[in-house]
Length: 233
Image (cartoon, rainbow, N blue to C red; front, side, top):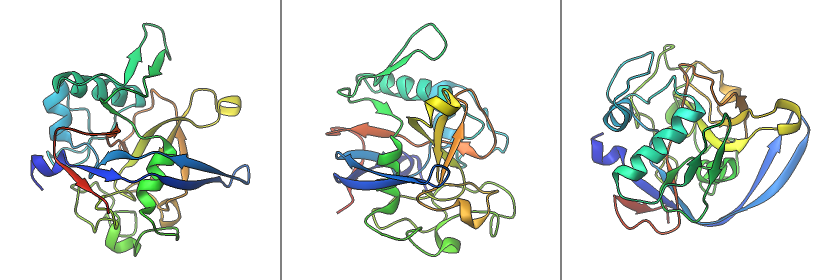
């Protein structure tokens, strides 16, 4: 998979998704507007090219970047946005926790968890979009290490590694009343058992949290006029 493939965005159609949380035994429907999502997680090569940093515990240009915090992901989104002459999605303040999302901006950003689940399911209704060993790197087949992006089968909309390999940071706060500023993680990772690699599973992490099975992928709002874009239809 070359660098052009790593920057490819998939057009995700508008629709409704039902989120669920087994911890509080609650489900809730969310309407999702059309948006674009990266075909693969951000790679170490791309992250280093934009930031000059190589934070990952495992090393490899085509491996997903990991050991990155939610804040690292936010800063990367803005840095790549400015590099491409787009409008930053995030306004970051000087104080801890100060970040605002400009929903009208055309720059890179993190997906919401509703967007993430809509894209992951890709019109399917089950817990996964295919047989787990074919679509994901998880504890049962990863040999307990990270793998290059795009090595398993994509979902019906052309998105790779939505399950397994690394968890994806999402924009959302997990449960502010109970966990404060902890953010949502989705997708499961290379060290997780099969039950964690399902479209509905939610995990939480402090926005400063860094660990070797957490990365992220990029989203953009509305019309994307540059870069390589493919339709999911």
